[in-house]
Image 1: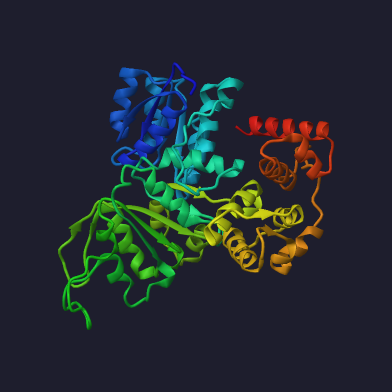
Image 2 (image 1 turned 45 degrees about the horizontal axis):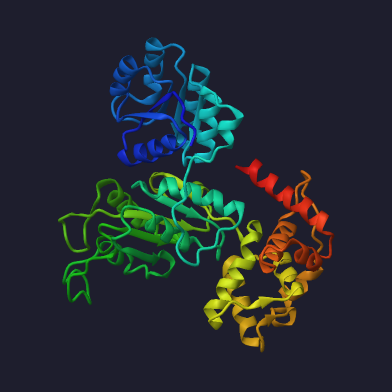
Length: 448
């Protein structure tokens, strides 16, 4: 972590949001001051003279927009970054014209926030190349060899210790529930329960009772009191998958539960306090659902303080072979070997079904494979034929393609790092392999 001799003031009325932003900014090496109101922030600016203000637009009392000219009266050259919801974007744009340095739209992208901070108060090239977040120990069997997953893990490491709600996005089969489990495991709530439910799988007539509980006699069949998922996850985490399928008439009640920290069981008028963190997931475009009127805008911004976007398997091909080893061990008790042709088929496939499709393919291969080597004929026909898909040698920027990177890394691992053996398997000279390895290492450095 690079230590900066600069201080950033975070102004937000939500304690969990301040904690998240404060922890992330500290991970970049800056000192942090916090305020829950514009009025208090003005006093801090007079007293502490911070180098940058991160200012939420919506605040109780004086709003961020109203505070901006007052900040300029105190410290004319003090840079201000506004944080705004989509509905306030026009105000933020006007504020930038009126003196704010920039604005960031919710949900916040932490990479975008880091770039905005560096752009506003300056950072050297060396600063930008230094990874500021340490990744905790991964659970056994968790695969994250690819750069895309490494970047996701860095964000999770910042988000997990806070209490803010998290929205996990990604295509079907990409592993959103696994990511939710990791957020819980890396959080201070890890000793508490992790309760998971699929909103699409809950019957409409019972979903309110499932979420918030009910009292005995509340409806036909309610023969005893029921706690509900929120209270079952008290002290821990509630994971709601397919949150976009939650019926519109129940969304206000979920919003109230998140804002107040209380739930009211069906058949009762007495709210009950809960200490539950929400992680939601969906493969739908909730922004589009808001525009269509099928998802409440206020609930969208409440659950979407931070987005964790799980990359599709086609964007993390370096993870394919390690995942294959994990799945073969799960199905057979030992990691199976891949023939070079089978490995190429797996790396060249489009993987529209993501990790779930890969798991199913390997389960099939383990059933059909009589020995300990998976051949192309053991794979589903669609994947076996993927060997005919042409793969470009380099990307548009002259870097190695994902397929070639993944093939080289998998072959090196198979050969226990022996470059001469790996070059023979790849059908290239050892000199050419060394050149490609250096290209991969340089690519990794420029991605940090």
